[in-house]
Each structure stands twice: as C-alpha cells, then as structure tokens.
Length: 401
Image (cartoon, rainbow, N blue to C red; front, side, top):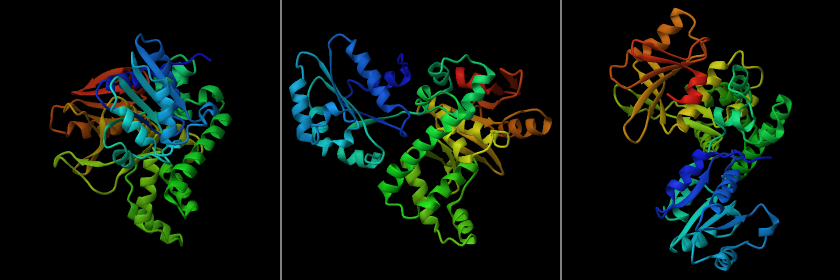
C-alpha cells in the first residue's frame, strides 16, 4: 500500500530541527504518530548528508534495547560523525530511563532527536521534568477532511463529506475500509485500549463503570456547557455518590489521553477566562459518534461543532467558547501573532430565526476582527452578511477561513 504523506506534520518537525530541541510527537493512540515517524525516516534517508538511526520498540529487532545503557550502546555504534545524525525512537517509554540517553545525545553536535511515546507513560508535566524543558511537542491529530479523501482515494463530494462526518478520521480505517460495521468494531477496540491503558491503569481508576458512563455522557453532550457539580448531583440522584472532584479528575485523565479536549469559556467584553463550566470535544468525531450511538439525524450540530473545533486547532488557533452577556459565540479563535476570528457553527441556515441567532450574535460584537458562520446550507460556498462571512463546511475544511 503506497504511503501517504502528512506533509504539514513533517514540515513542523523539520522546522524545529537546528533549534536545539528534542521533538516529541504527542496525540491520542492510533492517530498516526508511528506512521509519521516512518514517513520522516523515509524523507530523511533521501536527504544528502543525513544519517538516520531508527529504533522501533514495537519490532523484535530492537528487543535487546531495554535500558538507557543499551540505547547508548546502540546509538554509539551507529553514529556517523561525518553527517547530520537523526535519532528517531518509536515508543521510547519502553526503554528504562530513556531520558538519560536522550538528554546525553541531545548535547552532541550534529544530532537531532525525535521520539514518540505512549500517553500511559509520558505526559507533558513528566516530560518537562525528565527532559529538562528542552523539547518541543508536536500535536498529531486525527485525519483532516482533505487527508481523509487522500487516504481513501475519494473525490470531494457531498457523499464523501457525509462519510467523513459519520466515520471520523482515524488513519487505521484505510486498512479496515469504510464499512460502518467494521469501522465501529475498530473504533471500539481503540476506545477500550485508550480507556484501559491511558486512563484506568495509569490513574488507578476504581469506578470504571462510572468512567464509561461519563464518556458516553460527554459524547451525548458534545458542545454543551458542562459542570462537574451538575454531573455529581445527577449521579447522586441516581443513587451513586460521585463527587465533583472525582468527575474533574476523570475528565482530566481523558484529556491527558488526548481522547477529549476541554475548551474554556472566554468573556468577550471582560477579556478574561471563566474558571468553571467548560465545553468538551472529542479528538476523533467518529469515535464520538460510535459512543453516542444511533444516526446523526438528531445530533448533526454536535458533530459539526466537533469537526469545526478540531479543524480550527489544525489551522493553528487556540480556541475558547465566547460569552457575550447572555449570548454565546461558539468559538473565539486566536493565534500567538494576535490574530483573532469569531466562528459560529450551524447545520442549516434555512429560516430568519436561525439567521438572526447565528449572525445576530456576531453582529453584536463591537470590534473589527473577522467573523464567520460555518454551515451545510445547500448551494452555499461563500457569501457575506453585513460583514459576517458565511462559509459552507466543505469550503472551510478544504480552503480554511
């Protein structure tokens, strides 16, 4: 099967080279971190003056590398002082005290290091202490719509978009095919692996039935403002004593595993973040759909919000939920450069009441930053409503804002 480049991530890695930073690829299981490392290896091998040392701890050929001392010996035996050395290590957490070796070779001249690791063993806070803050995380997401089309050799049509909205963007679906039954079985396997290894085992979760109920609740309430206190009260009404602290801890564990993303609320007038009542979106909307069950007829707005949120992140924005007095703006999006845009998401803008709600909230914001409504309204590509741009979802997913 011909490999498909995920060039945007390869470009991000290459951009870090030469800046004295260790590159760490992070993201939910099965989003393609190992695949990306293999793509990088192939790209570097074609580069003149580059020497690649590749260690894949999932392959038996590297079984003997079990400690940092073994890793040191392996790298020493393969270093080429006449070239730029690229050390690529997949599943680095399988090597005891790997950070001692990585920190040591990081100090060498003409060496670049890229590693991937399991979320059950490597989290940002730990990496900071283990690697001394000398690293750059690159967040690898599930497939974008354009990548989905390329992976499955599909044309950009309404039917293809519908498949993407329903099935999601896990790269492994390329081998599974797009039969919904097979896809749901695969997503279930990924879900249970993440839940068991990256949440239950890592955090010693005791109340696993509640954890599973919590994930399904979050899937059913994607894009809604959620309070840990309200979940706790509901559970107590059902005869289960679950504190808000436990709810928050379990949600944090799901976010640490990259299954879930917490999105804070932002006071647009006061220009400050609220500390409670956030929204949550799933890394892969296909897995979210599998957990929510049923068809998408009743929850398409939730799916669209999830898809738009993830694509805004892919475009480099930090995303919050906007609070404008009693009104809500789906997404306030900012970049480090100071660029800001406001985004509303709707399934269809088919009547005046919907138009007033979606466009009216944006018109009420008294600044000159760009404002957008993204929908699946038929016969729409891009239009303007008194300074608010109306985009079709397909246009947004293929061409951006």
